[in-house]
Length: 233
Ligand code: ADP
Ligand code: MG
Image 1 (spheres, rainbow, N blue to C red):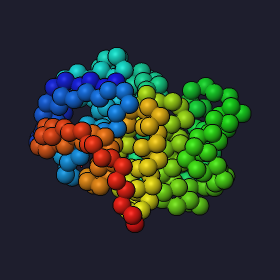
Image 2 (tube, protein in one colour; image 1 turned 30 degrees about the horizontal axis):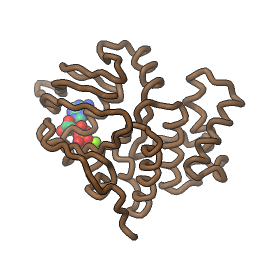
Image 3 (cartoon, protein in one colour; image 1 turned 90 degrees about the vertical axis):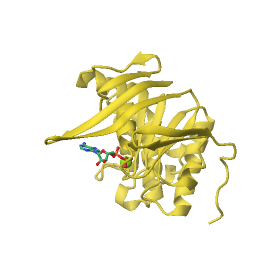
Image 4 (tube, rainbow, N blue to C red; image 1 turned 60 degrees about the vertical axis):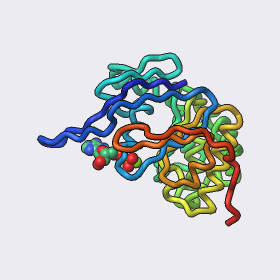
């Protein structure tokens, strides 16, 4: 599903240059649930943003579901994002003046789906995340965990090939974090390929595979056998 080879990325600020990714080689098969770990500043978000076609590497190759991702103009980049990818963020990124239902339905608008069908699909996905009864709530009428469920429903509604989540539990308490991770595990059980950035070992332990970044390189890449341990909190 994802194949990257010798990926490099630097940021230039003024005269200085920061080499963040120094040759990342990594591939992900369909149906994997991968945690990308590493200390703050190790380049996790930089890598996820490149995988999400929100940013481009300086060199190296990236092939997503057989499609080379290279030199895309903004129109094509946005088309590929809509077609291939779903995003979940630490800060939820919901639209504050839209209901839960309308938040989930919005990406479907950009896929040209008609209003009535958009609402039906959005409702199905709210049901899937256990929030059908909250469809008319605004984001500020939802708890953090509920907001993240809405964000996950929104990401899933357009049938992405890959779900990318940057610190999806970063703003949640421990118990809620586990609940959100259980939801993510359930989505993965249905076959979805999922990559999560996290610096929390307990969250990574709930993924099937852990990849650790340090100094711009992958220093560890291991499969986890027991990913169902959820603390009783
Ligand atoms: P992580 O997500 O692992 O905390 P990031 O990928 O966000 O790390 O950042 C890696 C390094 O690159 C950090 O030192 C950060 O300050 C720097 N960085 C990130 N984005 C930019 C940017 N747009 N411009 C300049 N430096 C950046
Ligand atoms: Mg980050």
